[in-house]
Amino acid sequence: MKEIVLVAALSENQAIGKDNQLLWHLPEDLKRFRAMTLGHTVIMGRKTFDSIGRPLPKRKNVVLTRNENWSHPNVAVYNDLKKAIAECAEETLMILGGAEIYAQSMPLADRLELTHVHSHFQGDAFFPSIDEDIWKADRGEKKTDAASGISYTFTRWLRKQP
Ligand SMILES: NC(=O)c1ccc[n+]([C@@H]2O[C@H](COP(=O)([O-])OP(=O)(O)OC[C@H]3O[C@@H](n4cnc5c(N)ncnc54)[C@H](OP(=O)(O)O)[C@@H]3O)[C@@H](O)[C@H]2O)c1
Image 1 (spheres, helix red, strand yellow):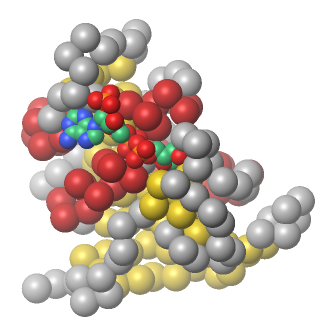
Image 2: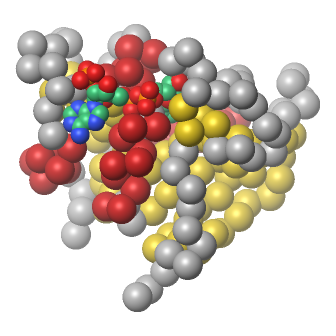
């Protein structure tokens, strides 16, 4: 069975970005993100790809766009989310956002690997709300980034059995 995993970092008010940029710099979170996604297929929206600016190394990069003329070296392009998921043969598909793609893929996801940042941020892109009737949290220990003083918790959310 293919596993669909959403990977995201979100603030207390569910913000994930502003002006097509991230809102914080948390080196431990970037490390975890890298370790978690290496070797897997990563799927992202065209705006998130633009924000990163290049394909992520050592991962199969899939970008979603409705623009049929869009292309980039070393990137597989799809115009349809469900088609991308169906046609990627790998067992674990990591969905990297942003807001539009999280909203569309959350109903299809099996697992959410979230970094909950314990601050409010003003953003213009948000993670969808998490329905705790559907999702069960396995929370890690709260950590604090020494440089910024921002605290955060890595949390795995799994779908509750029906
Ligand atoms: N904190 C985090 O973990 C995290 C992670 C990722 C991103 N972000 C932030 O999120 C923000 C970007 O999110 P966003 O919602 O603006 O953009 P996005 O979801 O990255 O990309 C949206 C684009 O994806 C394409 N698209 C959307 N749905 C599609 C579909 N069903 N089929 C084909 N293509 C589809 C469209 O591209 P075209 O316009 O080319 O047609 C659309 O404009 C940035 O601020 C970024 O920094 C944060």
